[in-house]
Length: 209
View 1 (cartoon, rainbow, N blue to C red):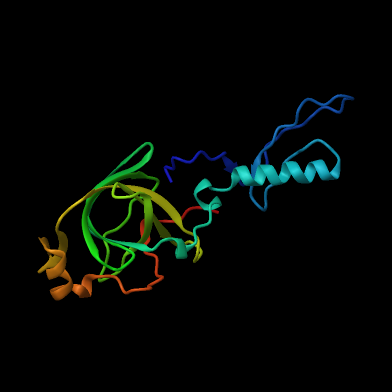
View 2: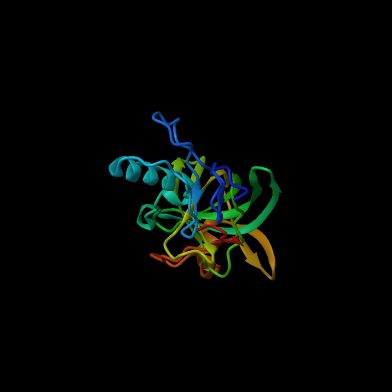
């Protein structure tokens, strides 16, 4: 995704490569391929061929999708109020303000920054991104989906945090601050539903296979 994860180039066409038939073949070249693509590969023993094809398929898979994320491991919830981002050759750099809800549902105001393969949208209503601590009080791992992607396929992004003594809330289209106690007393409708398993999506549609 303008991705920081390296990916071998894949093509729907088969590359025109021919190996001369000799007694000693040079080490074979491998190509990523789609389901309808073909590649010329020198003959080899069946078991070795299967192992090499499995390795090539693993290298062609998007790195972000190779790791499965169990939503049950993400007990925190991040409600994003403000987000600002810019695109660069590595992906997206973003910063903003949010409320982080701990394992007990208590809100904590945070300012965040991240550098990831995609940028996340501000939260609607009381939706929130599942998260977990990477370094307590300093950084979290946030998971998100993508528009057009299979349900259950999540991506992860590390957010670096600055914890605040107050929390954020939305009022008349503006973002303001108040104490955690006042937030729970007057604006708890902006808090995520306990036990919710919905995972918000990133801003860009999926272009992955």
